[in-house]
Image 1 (cartoon, rainbow, N blue to C red):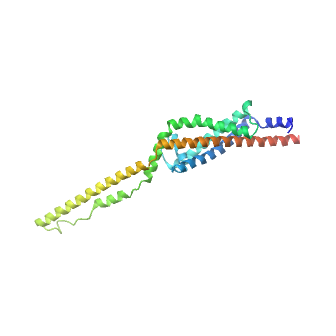
Image 2: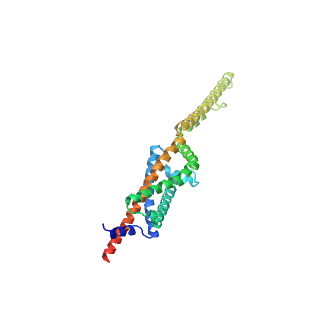
Image 3: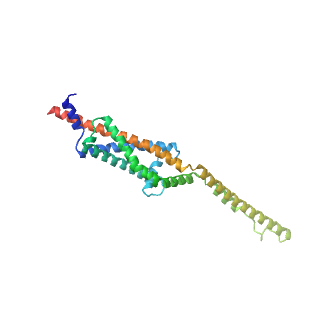
Length: 260
């Protein structure tokens, strides 16, 4: 490659800012998709569901817990990634010292962008808003997993057997009266037993819920580590895709120059 080709390469790798924004936005979108896949894998490793990351992102916007929040969370994540990519495109096309001349520099700048996003965007959210959202998600998930069969058993026992009418079938002697009193006291005892069993079942469910709930601090640490990895990979993809688009622009410019 002679000096003229080098100068052409360096020049054609830096299109106008408008095109740089488009290239960066595309790179940010692709990087955001890859990052979402990484965060889904992290959530699966914590037994919280692949789309739990999207739910947490949506809850940060102020929405209550619901599985219907998944599309909103995915949209917020991808829009944020695209905006970061667009800003990256502005910087690399407007600042001469940061212009990309190859994949090594492009990926390096992209990783640096991902780390900046991690420090500026993710860490403040993780230290302020995310802990309470994590607790809400875990409570909602555990409440959905608790069995509800005990309530039906209690309601069935509390009714007890149907007693015959005392006016038609029960004799009016003292022995019959004593038998009726004994039956009534037996039914009362059964009702009290049912209530006691219901209370013990509820207590077991509450204890089971507390035992199955993971440590929020541990989960937050795992999410932070996964997010750091996700932001690094996001930045690498952002830089690689943006550089690839710039190189394609360079190839087109070369073809046009040869035709001229």
